[in-house]
Amino acid sequence: MIHIRNAHEGETEILTNIGLRSWRKAMVSIGGTDAMLEGASDAFANFTRSVWLTITVVELNGEVAGWAAREALDETISDFWIDPDFLRQGLGSALLERIEQDIREQGLEKVSLQTHAGNAEAIGFFKARGYAIHWLSVVYSPKLDRDVPTVGLSKMLADRDDGTYGIGI
Image (cartoon, rainbow, N blue to C red):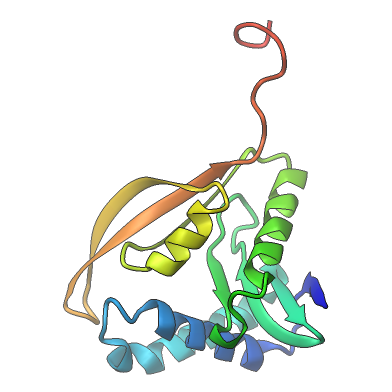
């Protein structure tokens, strides 16, 4: 059974491990992950320890299987990680629906996120759920010593058609 809940303060280790495993899989097309592994591990640990209140966890049969974060508690999903061993079981969809619901309940009209342009699996996942790519940027990564193309995806959550004509008339 899928269960979605808020993260708990003491979950840094499990959330870090899931984040790292997912990150390594997502970075395969870019390469160079071994050189960045220690830094990535530290970044995940620091992030999950310091902003755990912004993290939503998805479990399958009581086992933590993924998590997402909205670091600024706005419309931006800053992190979205499903353990590779738990892919294609509806967990990502359930987690995304919950995040979108939370954003909608805040009165926000859209949700946005970004990933590297080579992360075809994630891009396909989000596009299948109504997201569209709205920008492409190339950023130099000193750790990889190369440019990394990044895409921004977003989705409108609120229906702007209120049944009236014009601008709120």
